[in-house]
Length: 250
Image 1 (cartoon, helix red, strand yellow):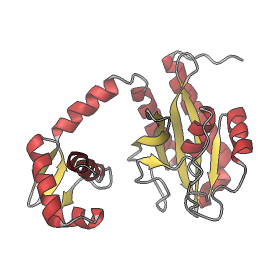
Image 2 (cartoon, rainbow, N blue to C red):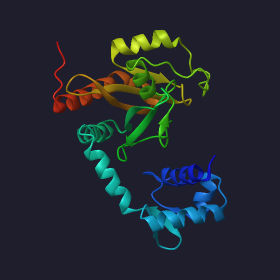
Image 3 (tube, rainbow, N blue to C red):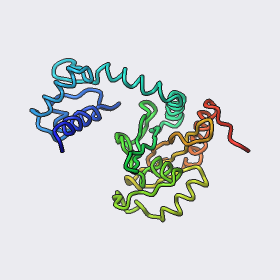
Image 4 (cartoon, one colour):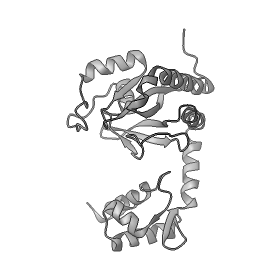
């Protein structure tokens, strides 16, 4: 990898290590987390802090800098559906005490696609951790949001998609995708991690176009509540669509 790309890739990995559960890092802690030498990482942290993307706090600790907030504000301002969807996500988390999230499909120039989790609820979570707590890129074949967005956009999961559990890729994708499109709902059961399930429904814009996915992850012990969770999800997504001007027929 050319040095410039390697440098940018390293900086991205550092920034992505910060999330709602890891708002601050020490040099040694981050080095262990990323598997990087402390000498290399120290140089990256110093550069990022000098640019304002990170800030040094306390004794040898780092957190995200205000410059990132400026950039994120510009991004969110260019995505008019984000604010109502984010509000719906947090309300869903508070009402269910589960991890709720927003995901989008991103395409590249080469014709590929990936599913990105752009927001997760901070409040409302009860019980043990579930798959999806920290991942930014979601597996399209084993996460509810991934399956939903791939099916609605007519995409096939990659042929070399990994099997995370014995239940991953347990059914024909063609049949499952058809069912997802008919129901407007994707469901996973122990496919990304044993003991974890997921649900996702589409977020639609004024013209009915698919903007993203609203979903929840839950421990298997909550599976008996699935029908109630689906109703809550649909109501939340419908509320966002209504705010954006979508009026589904019928």
